[in-house]
Amino acid sequence: METIDIALAPFALRSRSVVLAHGATGLARGLEPGETVVLRDEQGNLHTAHVADLDFGLEETYYRLALHDPAAGPGRPASTTAEPGLDDELRRVEELLREAREQGIVPPTRPWSPGPLAAAGR
Image (cartoon, rainbow, N blue to C red; front, side, top):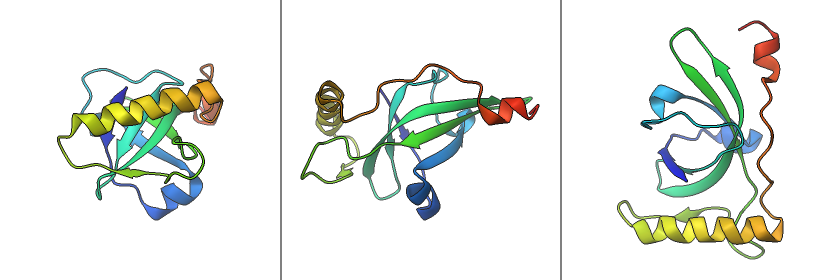
């Protein structure tokens, strides 16, 4: 599971969706449709999301990431504060995501869809 550092605007948190250019991810590989990622915001809070849509420009790939409901289960916070460099925190988030997926809390990965931007001829 990939971790991406990102600035999440209040609008993105309210709409539960954010568009991210691949070049801004710092990843060596592209993300796949339906893939789950961990987003670390500027305060160090961790958020889970999945790749809901892809769009391709002439020089860039764009991902629409759908932010999930709290993956930690009932009674736990929506995000967890992590200190930079603590791999144990990320392993714990991955463990919680696996548990949540088994309990049906996290939506399953979705089949790829070209999405509305592809239909508009972008």
